[in-house]
Length: 363
Image (tube, rainbow, N blue to C red; front, side, top):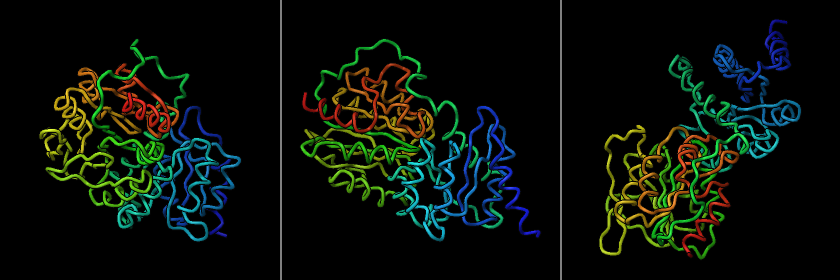
């Protein structure tokens, strides 16, 4: 009889309507211990409500047919339909809910984690080991849930404040490179953008994505699969080559200088206003200065404002700045910063950005 109590309590709480404007959270994990720990942390936080729990991917998919959710915490290792197999249907049935992968594989299984991110998961967090669910972990968990499910990131285009007036046109300067910056939710967006680029597009592509260094080799392979282009991690002196992708390393910022007609990567690790390493700002700033604005800068889904200062300089020197729109973003933070400042000439979903990039390069 005692073992039935948690189940009865879970059903009662799943049926309890969330507070108005609360972030509605679903927990999907086969471990009762983990579900209970996550539940306690979230229930104690203001502005959040547990609306459903599930012990399998199948159960989660079934519940999403009747429950409205903002953020789904999803384990990857579960019996039956695992998290990866269930993810596409969970995203589809979730109707816009953001998926936070909470799994031990985020540490040891970088490939599975990046596959999940490329499929549309918004963020990842390492599942705590026994005794590891401390206040620091709880704060990190709650911050990620707020970022993914907070009201400011659930805006529709009708809610987006109009940017200051600015001619919606591409720069007259012929771009020599495309630079893309992204963070939370950016891997899925980047894969969609690169997949949509026409095969004839032949400019070098530079990428700064907020990721640990250990994930970057797998990330490079993901970009190669999505784009059908060679992708490599930059080192000091790497050349940005036509039709190839150069990725900022995890331990430093990727900046650029000129050597004749070549665009050369330079790696540095100085502090930046955003606190990110690698940071998007130094990439944009160096291209603006070294190429006199002959570049296209693209800002995709991500928390914070990294890239906004560099994008402003790029636009000032005649470059083109584009941003992902609010509706298609997992987190409309970085793109919001360049959109509301009026420096983005194009604000659109990733596939549309790809078309505008191709048009800008051909102009």
